[in-house]
Length: 135
Image 1 (cartoon, rainbow, N blue to C red):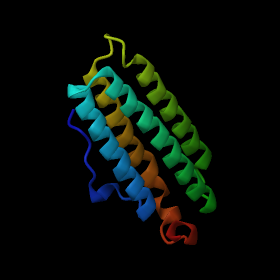
Image 2 (cartoon, one colour):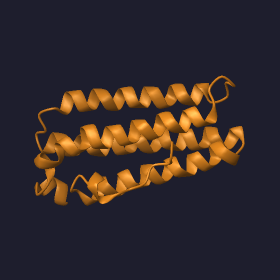
Image 3 (cartoon, rainbow, N blue to C red):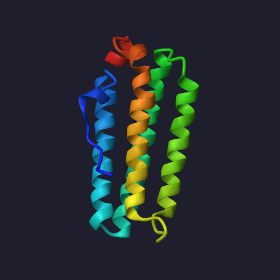
Image 4 (cartoon, rainbow, N blue to C red):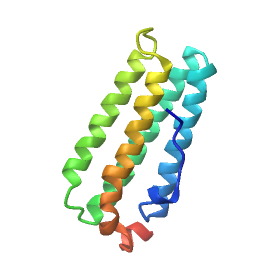
């Protein structure tokens, strides 16, 4: 699977969220390079960085959804928790020879794109133009 790329159709209409999504995609691309040519330590560091950034992003996004009274907040928040658990599981499995490096980046790429397209774009109508989203 090719590494993910940012395209404008992924925009949720909130510059801060779009910047954070682009940052996560960039992190996935760096992790993809580490998975191809890096050491196990580099891979683990990339996964740790991704977990840390995802937690930061999810907290920011959840504050936005709450401020804008997003009706599917609880479901979205639950998916965030599951996604973090999934990344942590991949981190634990990254040293296991049965989990290939290609599988790791495939799983993470599908996860990121499916989440942005399937879940994050759904909150767009609730947040675009909202004062909390602008500031």
